[in-house]
Amino acid sequence: MIDVLVVDDNRDIAECLELLLTSEGYRVRVAFDGQAGLWALDERLPDVLILDVEMPVLDGPGMAVQMLLEDCGREAIPIVLTSAVVQLREIAAGVGTPYYLSKPYQPSALLALVARSAQERIAPCPPIPAGRSPCKHS
Amino acid sequence: MQAQLSPNDPRYPYGAAVRYGGAAALGALGLVFAAVLPILGSAKVPFIACYTVLILVSAALGGFWPGVLCTLLCTAGVVYWLEPHGKFDIHDPSETLGAAVLVLNGVIVSAISERMHRAMRFERKARVLAEQTSRAEQAAREATQQALEIGVSAQKARDEMLGLVAHDLRDPLGVIDMNVGLIEKLAGASEQVRQRAAVVHRTVRRMSRLIGALLDSSQVIAGELSIDLDVHSMEELLVETVEEHQLEAKMKAIQLDHDSPRGLPMVLCDRDRVLQVLSNLVTNAVRFTPSGGRIQLRASSFDGFVRVSVSDTGAGISAAMLPHVFERYSRDRREKGGRTGLGLSIAKFVVERHGGTIQVASKEGAGSTFSFTLPVAGAPPSEDRLQLVADEANPLRSSTRSG
Image (tube, rainbow over all chains, first blue to last red; front, top):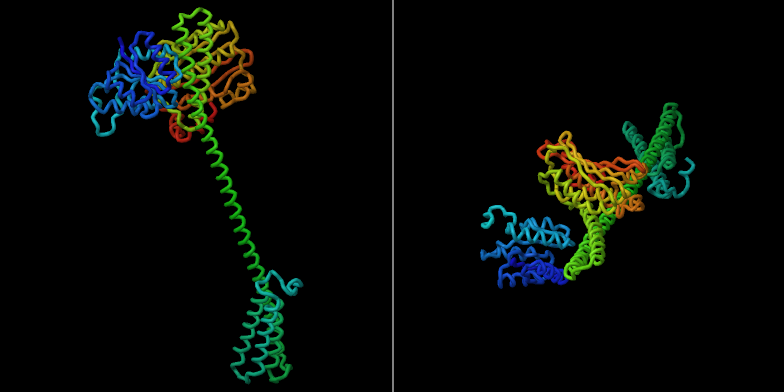
């Protein structure tokens, strides 16, 4: 069973995603901000992370950076970035994930993207600042 | 000259009392010379020359008439001084001539001084006027600049607000769409529920497109609409567009298909943005084409570019509206059901950012053909594209260029 963690501060969306993904046979957990998301990762590593961008306490890109700081498996989780922000493509490029979907999206589009990310498992790889070594897992 | 006799003429730096008093005093000085100085023999000539200086000073300070007054007094002094000394009497005709020349000199010097006064007065006036003009110009420039800044900041504030509102609208739209999808899925919905759900999905998609257009438009104005170039197959983009809109076309019984020649070269473009342009053109075509009509997407290559056209058999565009279809908030289009009038202006901007051009050919009642060009991947940059790079700092300019 594919394990998915949904991190979104909009509870209506998070719960809806939980229902949708559960009905498709995914094992789903939900967190409502980036910090809660990191705690959920400590508990168990999911196969795919669905991450909102703008959130209180710790936002999506902030959580993605935290996940890259330690080599304990969290850095290899594919991230599906979803948001209604205008510059989602640029933010996804900054996080280094090829999976992003602008809200509002068709449930089928999200399901397809989650299935693709679970299959391809491309880990986030942010652009390399000058003088740094590239991502180990890439 | 009459005016200069008035007591307090504003055209002179000093009052009448000072001017005439000064002239009288200097003339009196000439008389005093003549009365008190002894007969100096040969030294008489330099002293007589001094009279000219006295006249010059009076005229310079007071103008014409004070100059003449001083001249007359000085001439009297000279007459008094000359032989026979101590009397206002001249016997020698040469001395009479000398006195006459002195008077003539005085009058000429006074007239020249008067001219000089006038010239100085004009110059002062001109300087004051120039200063006033310069101050007025400066004030006008500042006012224009201020108005411009207010205008720019108001536009910026409006666009920022637009972006914010659009973003805050998209989130709840997502909630609506997903929940309807869930209801449909979880309740094992009947045909009727599925139909109603489809209406909600369609409406959400339309609203989402409108919000997207508002967002894009505010980005175009702010110069923030980014273009992410990569090599893509135009054929694939056409297939994807046709597939996306096939259902919509079928619902109106419109035949929607595409045609592209074999070996069409790859294009250098932003995939999502070009799909957005194609989608906008096809959505418009579906909207304006009656049932039973046909919409065709065609691609061809020429001279380093790929040309894509979207033709329909719809209502067409009137000759009066035709030049304005790519303008923002084109009112005519809105009145005819073209919604916000933003889509085509964004399409134009996107195509031009790629270094291409967008055009429309249409006849009322005989359908429309929108076509745009995109550069072939690896083609040498044309002059237009170089110009575009130069324009990139000012996206508003390139967005208003006619296509």
